[in-house]
Image (cartoon, rainbow, N blue to C red; front, side, top):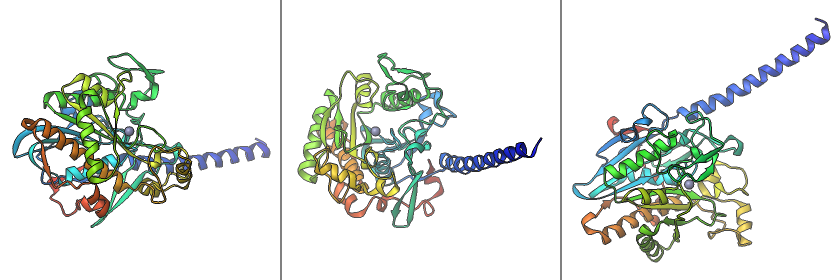
Length: 391
Ligand SMILES: [Zn+2]
């Protein structure tokens, strides 16, 4: 080999080493994120914790299996299923569900909570958009570190994607990526693609446990018309309207009602109602972080919702929510989810007193805004070991 050739090989080898080092550093961060465990302290209301695979066998041993918290009241009554992290990049939902799990005391009826519904997506990220891998919520005892996930399940858990996703059972053609989106795979199948087994598990909970109402918590862009709202099909619309009017009058925030379109398949607010006796509701709170025309996707933007580009768009009337210098902080979004979920329960219980659900010790909007979200989380180091669940 002449000197010129050996120099080329040396340069190639150096590049190879640099690429290997970059891949190792990046890969290690992604590996740690995928395996990071967040502790949840089961509060006084939690009576048992089971796995979603107890209702959908095909999830056993997979990364899509997830914890299901039962809070059974002293007295019999109605049942509510609360789901968060259907989209794991809309974290106000998870934060609200954790407030319920760590604090709620159930007097009457049963509360069933799945805090990380798309568990695989909670261990996925969106490198192309520069998502932070984690975010931290200040508490009275330090910072609670939480994984920031993605909208869709990880391809490590469900792969390959089809060219088009054919919805079951309606056979509507959906985008290929929706096969990993647990708000398109309802009602699901026991032996379908992994995400269909997730939604099938929730359908089985609703059918077997005779759940009265299901609330699916989300966040939506401020430039998207279906934001800051309760999405409800015809059968749920009366209760949704009462809840919307009540929070507006008593708590002074907007959460209008949007009808669930009957021709758009796979969504929780459509399929749950069509395939069970449960009344579904999907709650959207604004999440400026997900809007396209923002500055960098930082942890700060995720938490305070402040962005100069959105502010200028707001002044041009391009946003579907009111927006000013105060942004849209996390505590407002989480507080809205808590209040609207509690109000749906209250309205349901008024309409069906024989299926009443009575919960105490969950804060409403004004309290969460005043005290901050972290105020309601407990220190896992000080809790009894058998009360701490790793998620
Ligand atoms: Zn969503």
